[in-house]
Image (cartoon, rainbow, N blue to C red; front, side, top):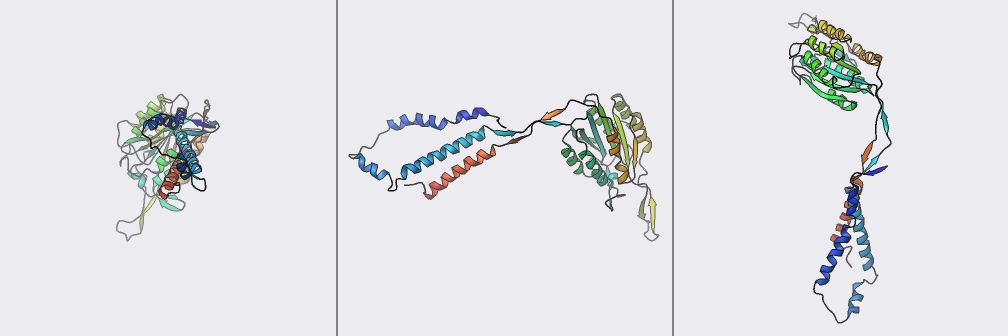
Length: 334
């Protein structure tokens, strides 16, 4: 149905008639030109085709329509649809994604091409977020510092966009795992008791920050927040030899990954640690979240709305422009 945000604007509809009535006595008070024969002027006032009065009537009608359209636009009409029920599973999911400089290491494959770690994480996590209908999802990006990019929300498209637009190293080159967990706990503790989960993805070890990861995990345990940790990065990476003439050498690009700390964080909070050496391993987080038992909450409803004021506004201005063109071209003159 159509609703009006400012329905009182329709009180302005008779305004031109009121102004005309107030203006008429002033016109009658002005001096008038007297002529000996009024019939002569009456005969010249109307065109041979008798269209003078007709043109005036059409002009007045168009002005009335234009004014009505502008008043209708001022009343701000909007279309309101039928109520839509949002599925709510009760899960509050906070994603903490490492975007430090090491996430730019190109040691993973995506669709047959070698890409950096963050590209794979974006691809997998964006699919994961898109499938979380009914869950509130938030996003934390961390490097040297941890930043809340998106609070817990049903707007999954915005969360996805903020993740895919994040470049490597924008939060600093180091890794503050403890600060990221602490920020997630601060946001999740504000939610009612229920299924509150943090999924943390990183490729390194905590080497900066104000909160130690283990201490942050203790805070999460107190708030009954479950943490799933994922270590990202290949175990082997082939590089050219130092001098370039003795073939290649194999290195471990994930040597700095602190699996012990990530495992301790997950175990302390009732979660689980995953080692994602490739894209397929990273997809296992789907199975983790889908296996969680949601807590039913009261369903939320909303009514979709669409603004309509631009249609009468455009119609009114088109009529006014048409009248101005008629005056300019002399189409309305007798």
